[in-house]
Image (cartoon, rainbow over all chains, first blue to last red):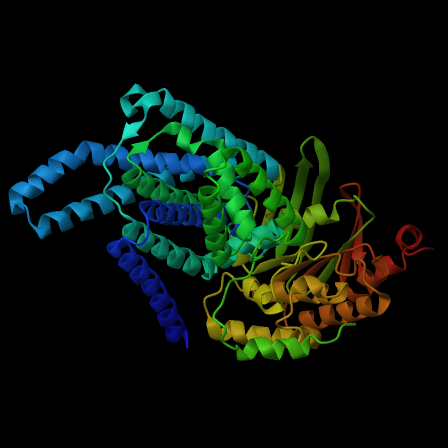
Length: 339
Length: 234
C-alpha cells in the first residue's frame, strides 16, 4: 500500500517531467514558460522551508528572503571563484567529453549544497538568540535580519555591491524540478517523523509540549535551521539560473511574498505550499504585462481568499490519493454523537 | 520521594513563592490547597522545570531538580498535567497520547499503556480518532491526565483537574485519581476545591500568598476550624 502510493507519486512526477521535456524539445513551450517553471520550483522550495518554521512549528518569520540571499551569494561566490579553475582542470583531465560535463554538473550541485549549508548556519545563528521571542517580536527580529543581510550585501564591494554578482547559468529547469521534488520528499518525511510531531506540538501548545518532555528550544532552532537550509538551496538555484544575484531581489517584499504563498496554500500543509507557490508565481507572471493592476488583483484575491478560506487553500490537510483508509472511516462512526 | 527545601520563585520582581518546604512520599496523594494566587500552580511549574527557583533546593528520587531542564525531569518519570488542560487541540486523541509517550522508545510498552489509559477512560477510546479540541471539558481533562500517564510517571503533578467541570465529572476525575494511585503512581494534587482534594488526599499543605501556613493529615485539616472557615465554607 505504502509503496504503491510512492510509485504513483513518482510516476506522476516523472510524467510531468517527460511532458515538459518533450514540449520544450519540440519547441512548443516558450522560454518564458520554462522560466516560470524554474521560478515555481524555487518558490516551492522557499515555501516549504518557511512552512517548517511558521506552518509546522508556529514561529512567525518574515525574514526568509534573507536566508535565500545568503544561499544565493554563497553559491554564487563558490561558482565564480572555483568555476573557471575547476572547469579548466576537468577539461585538461578528460578533454571535451561527456565525463567533463558530468563532473562539472557535480561541481554545480556542490555549489548548491554550499549555499544551503551557509543559510542553515545563519539560521542556526539567528535562531539561537531570537527564538526566545514570541509571535510579533520574533517577526520583527526576522524582518530586521532580512534587512541587515540586504544592506550588508549592498555595501560590500567585494561581492559586487549595488551592481550585483553575475553568475553563469548552469542549472536548467530539470535540475530545479528534481531538487524541488527532493525537497518535498524530505520535508514530508520530516513532518511525519517524531521530530515533525514534536514541532507541531510546539505550535499547538508550547507549555504542554514542554511538559511532555519535548526540548522545545532544540526543535525551534532545528526547524529554523532546516527552513533556512531550504531557502539557501532555493537561493542557490536562483543564482545558478538567473545570471545575476542582486541584494534587492531578496528584500522585505520577497519575504512577505513567500509568507503569502504559505498562508495562501495553508499553514502546515506540504501540498498547500506547492499549490500556494505555484498559484502565486503563475499569477505574478501572467499579470506581469499589467504592472499597475497586478498588485491590486493579487491583493483582492487574497482578501477574498481570507474571507472564504481563512485557513488557506488546503488548510492544514494534505492532498491525498483517493484511497479509502479503513481506520479513518471507522472513526467517523464513533464520533457521530456528542454529549 | 520529592523534597522541596526553602524554595523561592519570582516572576520578575514579584515574589511568588516565599520559601516553601514540603515533601511527598512514595505512594501518597498529597494536596496543596489555597486560594487564587497563593502560589499552588507556581509550585508545580517549578517542580516540573517550567520555572526556575531563585533560591532553595528540590530533590526527587535522590536527584537535584533545581537546574534540570523540563525534558530531563520528564525523563525521571515525573509528569505534569498543566492547569487548563492544554491538550493539543488540532490533533486527535490518539496523537495526543502518542506525544505523551514522546520520550519512550518501547513500542510494546506504549501500546500497553495506551490500552491502560483507555481502560481508565473508556470515553477516550470511543473518541480515539476525534480531534481533541472538539472534546467536552471533562473529556479534555481525561485526555490531559491520560497523556501524562503515557510517560509512565512515578510522580504525577495534577494542576486543578476539577476546574470548570460539572460536579458529576469532578467526582469521576477524583475516582480516577484514586485508581491511578492504587496502580502505584504517587500524586501531588493542586486544587481550589479543597473539600474534594482533602477527601482524596493523605496529607495536605495550605498555601497562602506564597507561604505554607498549615500542614497535616487530610482528615485532621478537614476538621481544623481555620481550614473549615477559610476553605470549606464554615
